[in-house]
Length: 342
Image (cartoon, rainbow, N blue to C red; front, side, top):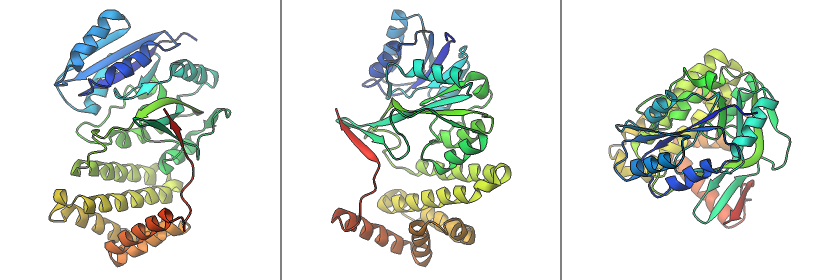
């Protein structure tokens, strides 16, 4: 078990966080690493910091390029990969020091194409761990092609995130990330999973997913609507190749459209004429019959859909009322997230 692992780390405006990330890689118990730091034209001192690390450790390769976004940085990084396995790491996140060793051990033991670990949502003062789908200490879980695609569409046990998974390099080297979009993983993951024969899930959390107030995800803009484009693109793929998952795909499409309609309401300045809300509303109306069939057994989502069709504000009022009931403890809180103080 000494195959080379290539870690691709895109870097942009993270000078406060990148040392934590890089140190967590350099101190891995698994030593046969190729660490590719891609400076995506960062205007701060990220490039200098990366070069300084490269001088200290010959496993590090630094690539400097003009700013092109996360997808472009990953695509460029992949050109330098020579390892049998590849791991994507976002530069504000960090790894448990045993992560690579445990992933490599699992991918070789189970002869898998991809191994994924559980992860923490890492806030400044505490961690959150999703105990609904991950159980610490449990035996690794093996999924075949149909099951992995189902779990990807459900988006609970298997997320669209490219990070946190160890891939056979040969599986992904000819599947580039789509440039110029946010939520690029949504456009990418199903293309990869289609080629997977065996996928393994480790239930122990080994990746720390940083939750930053200044992240591109936390700062809402119309570019966040790219996720709807990605899900629509993936839905067409699901209908064509995994027809039995059509309803699951429709459910996630509906949930995400409703979420973004409400986010646009809360951020009216970026949709002052209501054009984006109108587009979402029209999409839901046009596909209402398909949506209502898909959510037939999900009473909460079905209720939201019916209220939205009557008037979008009725769904908003319903969600506000539900939140108030939970706050007053007249309605039970969703379970499953464990908070761990740092």
